[in-house]
Length: 491
Image 1 (spheres, rainbow, N blue to C red):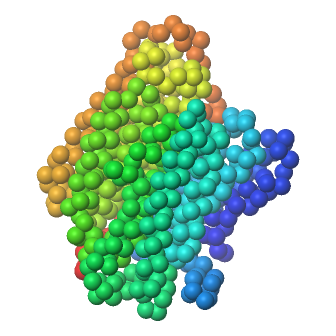
Image 2 (tube, rainbow, N blue to C red):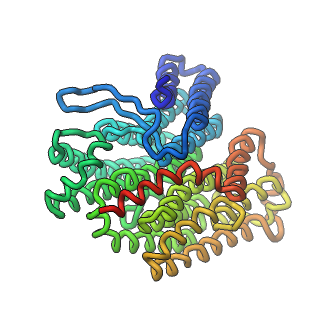
Image 3 (spheres, one colour):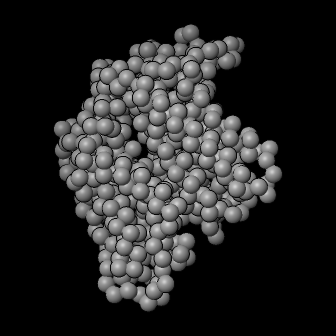
């Protein structure tokens, strides 16, 4: 059974069915969306059961000729890098759709675009032909533009346009690099695996060629992560986006950038990677330090969590810059944990905003006694995000630091400052929102309802489970990351 195609196109089937439904039947539309997204999640769990983590080669490969004149193939495959990201995507998509049950404006269009977005994200993580990869990459752009631009906040049009232009700008450079690789390969191909095998031929064309192609891909991926100085689209997009869209934006879309660097830049251009490493490590430090300082300065809870994403993706880049298996494992694990933890945080910020219509940290006070369940789940997510031992965030950050310390001792020691600042702004938020005397303005506040618990408790459970027993996640990716480290260091 072509499981990968099934996982990718189940949400598409749901989207097409919704497109043919009467827009007034909102309950039926929501039910169809949840069923097809849920089936994609179940199929990805079946794939996980059949996946062999001890094998670093591509598994579940599907291949057939698509555009013979250009030697373009419909080629899919999954390994220890793409597998955990697929699970994360199907899980967060399903949870986000449950969180979207409160959307009452243009329901049919919302659910259609959300399912199309899921198709694009899943396709990016398993496409092994650059033509197909680029198609899926661009598919994610349009739904996100409409989801922010129609259902967002007061500045939604500006935020959506800025997101679209930044991402499209990066996509142009990626397209140029893909075309360059196509004509540089012999025979001409867009098969990623064949191009990796031809990497010595790319080096023979000169360092300038390899570095220019490397930069083309890097700009596209860095905008998505987002890396400094391409980060400015992110906070506004997060603040203006609906809660469920913010979850996907932070939980999955940002990971497409890190995935691209690990899948494309490192194995295909090892010499260019080595030349750019001093810049990559400096940019990782800037992301960590600058992102945490920006988050510290925020009074809007959602904006604070958005800037913390820049900080946390800096840890992943620190692990990537280590160029060893420990750092690579840490980077991928950090991407997974960041998706789970930050997804929780955005959902929880949405919970309080739905009740109070404000995200101003200074507007609250003493809510811990009034909404104890909410306070407990939010505190757990904050502690995981600041890297408390026993929770998922600590393990991945520790591995990133451990991997990077050998080759980059000074930058690693400086990057630890990010943890201290992160702890400061999360503890400040907990203190101002939940502790002290109750602000009487919120005396009628109610605790989390069943739908909100269904979306947040599974993520909280995963946060604890992966923190106490990280072997579950690390075993899935370790063999692939070890093989990748050997590949990129063997010039």
